[in-house]
Image (cartoon, rainbow, N blue to C red; front, side):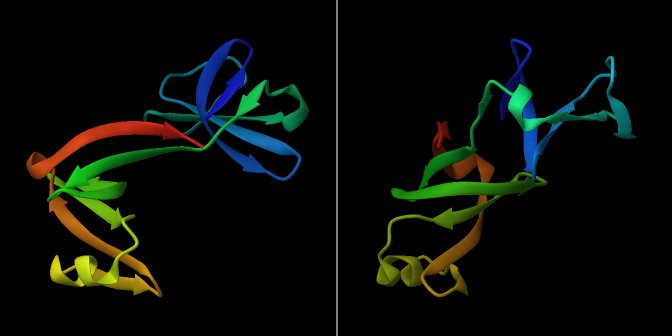
Length: 115
């Protein structure tokens, strides 16, 4: 997320620039697909740039949400205990990284964390 001209946008850093995204048309924004408009601004003009991730609890364990599809959430275990991850049937995505699909209705305590 980026704060630019007293407004917050979804954003992505790109070298010396920041890519700002918004759902509606606006001055200086170009439609990249329906409902997604882009404007590239110099990073020096951005007041704040922060990473936001969604955390949650599933089956009593801590996770972050990576994505969603059709009533399911792609989640990554953040508890750091591989026996727990394996007992839950999570996939070993990388060394020490365990992911899986959780029914959205079973996920609790959804919250945004700014890093």
